[in-house]
Amino acid sequence: PVSVTKICCIGAGYVGGPTCAVIALKCPHIQVTIVDLNQARVDAWNSPDFKLPIYEPGLVDVVKQARGRNLFFSTDVDKGIQEADLIFVSVNTPTKKSGVGAGFAADLNYVESATRRIAAVAQSSKIVVEKSTVPCRTAESMRTILEANSRPGTRFDILSNPEFLAEGTAIEDLFKPDRVLIGSLQTPEGLDACQSLAAVYANWVPTERILTVGLWSSELSKLAANAMLAQRISSINALSAICEATGANIDEVAHAIGFDSRIGPKFLRASVGFGGSCFQKDILNLVYLSESLHLPQVAAYWRQVVDMNEYQKRRFSKTVVDTLFNTITGKHIAVLGFAFKADTGDTRESPAITLVRDFLQERAYVTIYDPQVDEAQIWLDLAEALPGVPLENIKKQVTLAPSALDACKNKEAVVIATEWKEFRDIDWAAVYAHMNKPAFVFDGRLLVDADALRKIGFKVTTIGRGQRA
Ligand code: NAD
Ligand code: UDX
Image 1 (cartoon, rainbow, N blue to C red):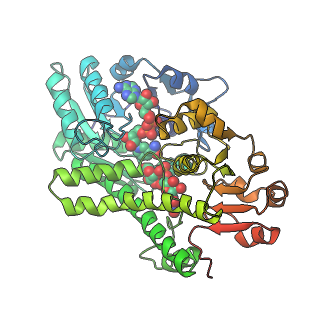
Image 2: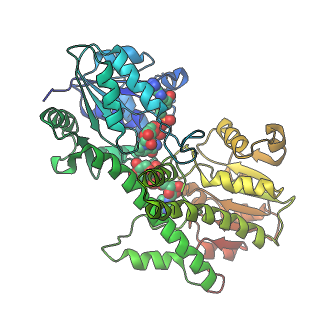
Image 3: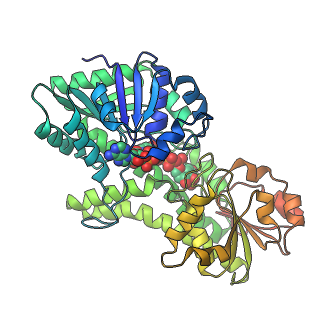
């Protein structure tokens, strides 16, 4: 097997950036260059004061140690490709917005153009690693493109190496992954390439955690893992609706079922719904795959996980309206949190966007505070969520606040949309003192101590806790 000395990563996003920064940190003998077409993004990765384009705990430390030593960020994609012996393709694969499979299938345009670029400029043999999450058999298409365009004497081996990191804990996850998965063709060349990549990870990952499988199993395992994780959340959220209707408590139910070692305690936190760039996209991808394989019952089964999530978000905004005496028109609501989960500034598919949209459509006034999300991003997301509504009209109904306490001043209700720890720890008595009365709190994340807040005087509604209890 080739011993890898130079790695190029195409795509300096949430996955390519942290993943390859950690490879550089852990493998000082390997030169790692992360390339991207987006100049502003690359500039931010290179910024002298480490104002990186993404917020991720621990990331700045990693970049500080490796940048300029064996970690480089550049917009020179061609040079990156030419110099490397191993190339990660870590570009975005969003859900298609138009054409065949619109709303379900993955848009493979970015993967294809990166692959075509590799074919066009490579002058020596490369191991090409599919890091992006892609439908089954994408590696096959990449191989066809590369082989049809390769120069004599250059060969391309394709591997699938999906990424399992979660945002907010990316660095921890990369330092100590549950597993690293590598898929390859089961030919001597394919297995050699697999060994070359496995040797990179073996610099810090115990070998028993490096799993090697066939190409398609690897591709499908990524979709399967995300589908099963999301399914757990939709299951607990479905149960939260039963709890609210009966007086049972979803915390107690999750605790009780999580004690079963076959079920396990993790990922059973009821919420206002899951968000993030992966779960919905990957399940819809699986739905599309199932349909293309003429398996409509399988497609319907997975589709229901997304439908339940939509239901949960709608159910929560309806609870807010119902509790506020069936109308929120003209009322003032503080929304705490805009990111899709805590410890990230990422808002992709954030349930907060859906909630704010629903509140605006009910003609409420909304004030938003999030500790990490850029203001410009909030305006972009709201404009996209309310097509046809001019931004200046949105701005008449929405304000952004510099702190949680500021956001809550003179409001009728507070809605917790993201589980930022600081929202649990704010001075709720001070919040109460500055709110209009009766003061309502809607906890969409099982975050605050509801009884303590009730003692202060708040009227508290929590996901998954019945009023009849
Ligand atoms: P992202 O949008 O943050 O980053 C992708 C980057 O690729 C962008 O900066 C874009 O400019 C760049 N790019 C696109 N086409 C390019 C090209 N031809 N040449 C050079 N650069 C190009 O996306 P992301 O969140 O990092 O996700 C990347 C992939 O990883 C997706 O397939 C996603 O499903 C998967 N994934 C994401 C996560 C996550 O937590 N975000 C976790 C696991 C897997
Ligand atoms: C997910 C997968 O966890 C990760 O392995 C994969 O590589 C990418 O997709 P991510 O979307 O970054 O990671 O975060 P995750 O922690 O999975 O949370 C996704 C959403 O589910 C968030 O909105 C989170 O708040 C929500 N969630 C999570 C719950 O509502 N309840 C839970 O118990 C866990």
